[in-house]
Structures are given as structure tokens and as C-alpha cells.
Amino acid sequence: MAAGELDRAMQYLAKLPGLGPRSARRAILHLMKRRDSLMIPLADALRVAAERIKPCAVCGNLDTTDPCAICADDRRDGTSLCVIQDVADIWALERASGFKGRYHVLGGVLSALDGIGPEDLNLDSLIVRAAAPEVTEVILAMNATVDGQTTAHYIADRLSNCGVRITRLAHGVPVGGELDYLDDGTLAQALRARQNV
Amino acid sequence: MIEWTDDGVILGVRPHGEGSGVLNLMTREHGRHAGLARGVASVKSRGIYQPGNCVQATWKARLADQLGTYVCEPTRDHAAVLLDDPLKLAGLSAACAVAETALPEREPHPQVYDGLIALLEMMEIPELGDAWIAGYVRWEIGVLADLGYGLDLDSCAATGTNDDLAYVSPRSGRAVSLSAGEPYRDKLLALPRFLLPGASGLGAGDPDDLFRGLALTGFFLERHVFATHHRAPPPARNRFVERFAQVTTVSGGGLNA
Image (cartoon, rainbow over all chains, first blue to last red; front, top):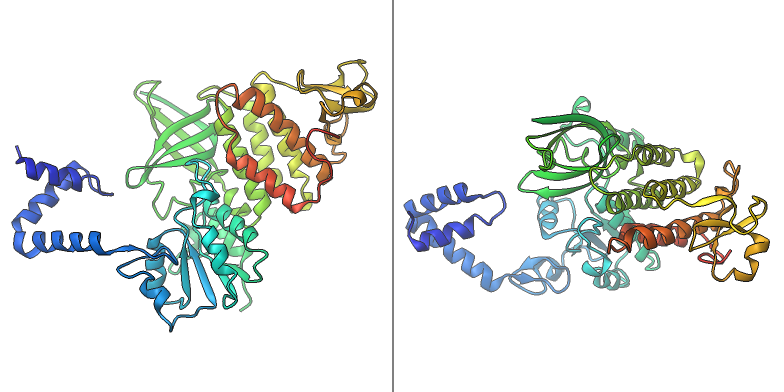
């Protein structure tokens, strides 16, 4: 029987995505064996993150400053605005190092199943940002799913009067992908979006 | 152990745990049926589990009333073909949402299933233009009929003839001729020309007619199906109708002809 404090810690760990009660037990025992080198620094890091990290009022990104580092960076291309679903997508695109503009986090997608409508997303602030004179392109970087593309089409409609070029990410064969292992839908999309060589 | 294999259309997937999902399928012989599918979030499988895609599904459970598990093989990918067409994508979402909301669980409706397959195939034919929307309206009429709220559009409720039919009674769901219905036109629903007896596509591309058709079926679905079960009409259907209204210039759509 674990002490009450250990039980409480395990219950919280078990709530994390990908962790169940058994994984939480293993994790807490691992941390207990590395109390000074891992457990205490982890607890400090989590406490600092909870105290200092907040959503950026401009784009919705998570950072210790508001506006966030990306919004405050004058070296970024202010003419290009990339609309993404969640903060994790910012991290993915920044890792790819291919985009030098600014971001706007919607906070989800329109979902008939989950009852998420336009009023539940950060759309009004997006319209305001897209209408700014310096913005010339809005990139819709939604997931290639029915809900993601439905949201992209809806946003394109809302932005149609803003006088900006509206683009979306390409869909098709992933790098390293072998044609024989791809699903029919991806192959069909790739064929439709083929380009001159 | 209970097991069956059936053809199905994916209506929706709700994430469950780290990589699994509760799949809601419209199957031909077993009706709208849920089950747990493992690996729906994997890189290989993500493209399969989109609303509107067709699969061959094997369902297993120890007891009949359990959720059970699905193993699915993709047979036709409709979602990817329609992703770039806003109106067709909205139509696909609306059809899946209506099927999910209107149809009772585990009750076979093979004609509704066959109609849904035909509608999805119509959507992939670019030469049809917007005429697939007439197919959508006919599919919703089929849903109403299967649920016991069929419309009788073959003859006038007042005169018994099938000449000059122009309206539908919101109370009885029966057609009404132009002459019999004219004094009450403000209270009657417009009957689109493509639903006239022997129409064979007449007016199937006319935006006004298509809008009247959507308004007609939307009225009866809301009154007899959704409201009866205390459910709101699915937002996906409302967005589909709004998008169609945006892309067409509609005159006098709604209750009046």
C-alpha cells in the first residue's frame, strides 16, 4: 500500500495522456529513486510553468510573455499569418523551420460530433488580424480531416472580404512514403495536386 | 462470442484512450452500430477513419448488448475526394450527421444505407454540378419514410389529381396542387419540381428548387424526428444549407413557392 501522498501523486500522473494507473506507478517509483536529480527539478519546473506561462493575447500561443516571443519578434514576416488548430501545431511548424511569419491559434476545429461551433473558436480575433493592412497572405494549416477542412472552408468564407490571399497546406505523398503503403485517399489527393517537373 | 461482417459507412469517430476510437458506422444489415476500433490514430489508419468513408467491418463482442470491437478494411475513400470542395464536404458532413442523429441504433435500414452510398457516389461525379443536392434531398425523404414519416407527393391531398402539384402540406406531408393550395400558400411548403411524379431530374440543377427541397426535408426532419426525440437539428446540416444559400442566389426560398 502506497502512502497517501504517493497515491495522490499517482492519481494525478494517471490523468496524463498516455499514462494509466500502472504507468503512473512506474513513473512515481522512477522519480522516487531519482529524487534530487529528477523529481525535485521536475516539480520546480512544473511549478514555474504553472506560474509563468500564459496564453498570448494576440495569437493564443503559450509563453512566459504576452505578447509571446513569436508575436514580439520584429524579424518575423508580418505579412504572412498561419492559422493552426492548437499550440502543438506551432511547435511542429517551428521545428520544420519553413515558416517565418506569425501564427493564430484557433483552439480546435468545427466539430459536429463534439458540438464545437464557430463561436467556440478564436475566429473574431483572426478576422481582425487578417484585415490589418500589413497582412497579405493567410495560410490555413488545418489537419487533412473532414472537420479540419470544413473549418478551413468556413474560415476562407469569413476572410473572403479581407483582401488577403488565402492558401492552404499541400496534401499528398509524405517524404519517405512508399506508394504501395499509402491509403487511397492520400494517393487520390496527391494525383490531383500533381505539379510540372 | 458474437461476430458479424458487414459493409458500412463511417458516420463519426470519437477518440478513446491514446490511439483507439469509438466508431459509429452505418451498416447495411445491422443499422447504425457503434464499436471500439483500435489504432484509429495511427499514421497508417488515420486516413481510413474519416466520416463518409466506406469500410468492410467485422464486429465482435461477448454479449449482444456490449460495445464490441471493430476491425475494418477500407473499401472506398469518399472523404479525401471531397476535401477540396466546400459544398460537397458540407453535404457529406450533413448526411453523416443526419444519419447519426436521426437513425436509431442497431436497427437495419438497408434502403437508407443504399441511398447514402448512391449519394456519396453522386458527389464524386463533377459533371453533375449541384444536381447531387437533389439526390441529398431524396435521401432525406428516404430517411423520413424509413422512420415512418413518409411524404406522399404523388397526388393532391385535396383534389386527388397529380396535375400542377406545387405545395406540400406541413401537417400531412401530402402534395397540394397549385389551384387548391393558392389560398393557403403562406402556410404551405413549396414542392420542388424535381420531386414531381415522373420528374426524372427536371429542375435538379435549379438552385431555387434545390433550396426548396432542403427546406422541405429540413422542416419534416426537425418536426418529426429531431424534436420528437428532444434533439436539435445537427449543426452540420444547418451549415450545409447556409453554405448552399451563400453560393447561390435564392429567391423566395423557405415556406412559400
